[in-house]
Length: 297
Picture 1 (tube, one colour):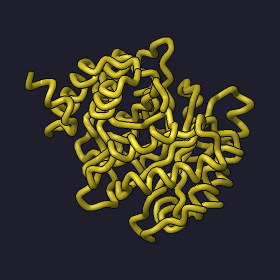
Picture 2 (tube, helix red, strand yellow; picture 1 turned 135 degrees about the vertical axis):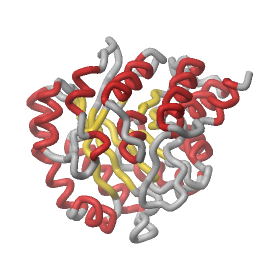
Picture 3 (cartoon, helix red, strand yellow; picture 1 turned 30 degrees about the vertical axis):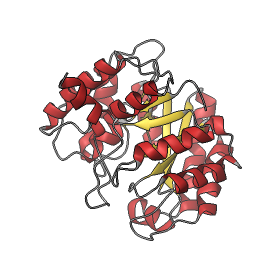
Picture 4 (cartoon, helix red, strand yellow; picture 1 turned 90 degrees about the vertical axis):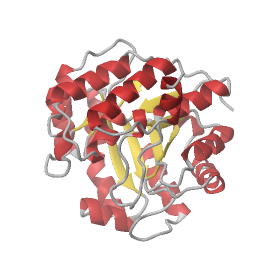
C-alpha cells in the first residue's frame, strides 16, 4: 500500500454543481483560495460546461480568473467538448478533465449520446490538448451501478477506462456515481481496470450514499491506488439517487489516511475549518464527521 496519497479536491466543481443554494462568484473564489492554503496539490476549480446544463457554474471564467494560483498547485477544470475546451484555454486553464460513463443508458439520458459517441467527442479535445501542452484527466462515471440500467458490465468499465487512457488521458478517475458500491465490488472493479490501465494512472471517486465510501477507498488503497477524489465538507452528491448524501468528505478521507500513517501533505485542521466555512455558506451542517469532531475539541 502506498505511503503517500494525492487528494484531488473536487468540491468547487463536483460539490457545488449539485447544490441548490446559489453560491456567489466571490465565495467560489474564496473557497478555492482557502483550499489552496491547506496543502492540497490538485483542486478542480470549476466547469466549462453549458450554463444551461449547470447554471451553478455559469461564472466559470470569472472564477478561474479570480483565484490566486498557488505555485505547485494544479487547478483542472471540466470540459464537455472542444467548445468548452476553447473557453477553458481562453480563461488560462492548463489542465482539463473530460467525462463519460460506463453506462450506455446514463450517457444517453444525460448527454444525448452513447458511450462511443461521447468518446468520439473527446478525440479533438485530446488532439488539441496535446498540441497546446495541456494535461487531460478522464472521468468514468457509473462504474459500480447506474440509476437507469442498474448493473453496469465490468467489461464496459474496463473498455471505457482503457479507451480514455489510450486517447491520452494521463489519469482516469473511476466514479461510483450513485454510491452503491461495497468494498469487495470496488476492489474487483479496480483490479479489472488495472489489468488494462496502469495502477499509477488510476484514481477512485466514491459517493457516500450508503456510507461505504471510506471502506471502498481503503479496499482500493490496499490494491495500490494512490489518488483519491473527495469534496470538502462532503459537498454535492448525485441528483439521480434519492437520499444521496454527497461526495465522500475530504476531511474524513484525510483523517483516515493520516491515522494509517499515509502522508497527504494536507493540514487537516485548515481543511476542516474550510469545510465548516462552506457548510455555513450553504446553510447546512457539515458533511464531515472529522470536521465536527475537531470543532468539538
